[in-house]
Length: 126
Image (cartoon, rainbow, N blue to C red; front, top):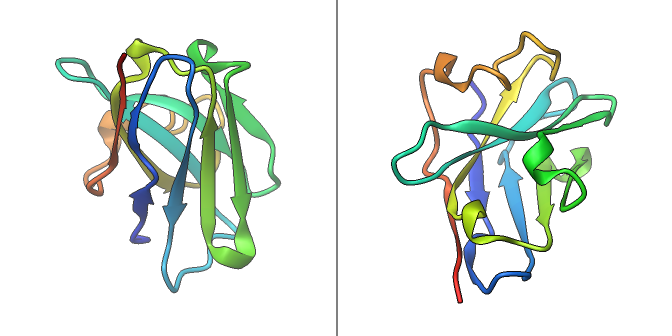
């Protein structure tokens, strides 16, 4: 399993922006899809966005138009640019690798993952 390190979280006001990073030190992510997930207090973990190895992307409806996922294979890093943040975006954000972002993938069933990193906290509050 690839070790991933999430960073870039913080506290911002509603309408603000953050860019999250998902790094895989020493690993080659070229052949993997990479997904971002989040878990808000008292809620189940959910997929946010996913990027395939060919850079095609998937976004959940609740972030469409506000979030952009990208990847830099040379840096073994994926990013999640989040704009127009809302209070309901407050959560711990995690990333994972997976074979692809297709409809039956773990992107839609995060409970199938056995292990999670520490994540990065995003707090949207005035």
